[in-house]
Image 1: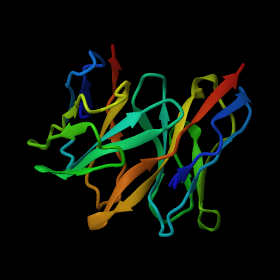
Image 2 (image 1 turned 90 degrees about the horizontal axis):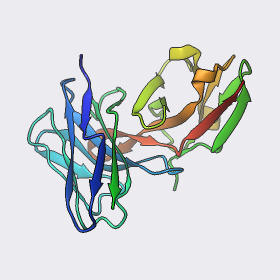
Image 3 (image 1 turned 30 degrees about the vertical axis):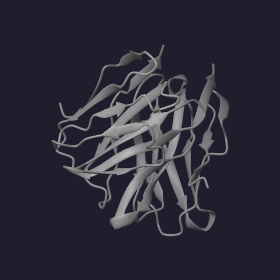
Length: 114
Length: 116
């Protein structure tokens, strides 16, 4: 079955530590996205990538980093510079950003800073 | 400024009643429009989408939405709500960014509560 896999589902991090969230897709999609979800704020765009080896900052990129070395993978690192990292993180992909197409979502990773 | 506005944070309806969830967007060009649904702790599932053509769009689970350019709106409707429709609903717009790309941009969501 084609889809987007995010792991782990739950993640706990101590303050001051970096942590990496995994996102893998087997849909052969060019574009991938990371969103952060907080109660009452909807989904806010962290980073997106239109093609391998290229990525762009979204609306709330500070304290986060990404890489896109393979088409299938778009990991997100939450660094110690992120002041309030506790949130639900959603990865998505689409055929491209310049075509009329919807985004498909993974099941999310809930990150808690302890 | 908010690109996508969902003015209702919560909506409560009785099972079997009709439903309308509101969505307004702030882009001038004909946008790409979407409605997604999210169950607690899960990812988002696409209900329907509008790119062009007929302004009344049919989706899954009996939902429909109507694009009204004059109102910059894309409201979601369902004639008879089922208890299983209780969830969070998100309106999204393909927001134009540099290089001719369109990035899904979401409203804050509307939480639907269904009473038996």
